[in-house]
Image (cartoon, rainbow, N blue to C red; front, side, top):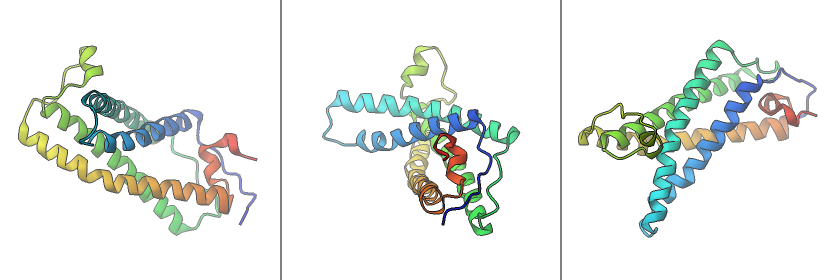
Length: 184
């Protein structure tokens, strides 16, 4: 069902943050799976851990910036053609993704620093760890990190599925709000 509804796009800064965070988060998923494989050469495993740990801190910073930006620059409204139940699901999905991105990045950081592991990029530039070594805290943070990945990946799949639904089936302008370069 194609419509002629052309809602206002997100602002360029919001679009850039969205796609940067999306690419970074999606890149950490296969890395997070691969780095736990026991048959990997240690040098490969170390490189994957370094990538995953340091990128997690960068993702955290970008998500905080995204949330702050969104508070002061609310997203454009959805087109009138989007049913109320879809609006509710979209809002809930976005909130849950932000919460889970914060849970994942904070629990990952706490696991690493409480576990007394290095954060190579940040250690190299002299940024101190904000959490002291604590084995029990590291274990709890690891359990949270490992558990929260499943609902986060599920929500990412739902989000991508909804975007594709609006882009390919509905063609109602919802997708092009975040990808205005694809607007016809």
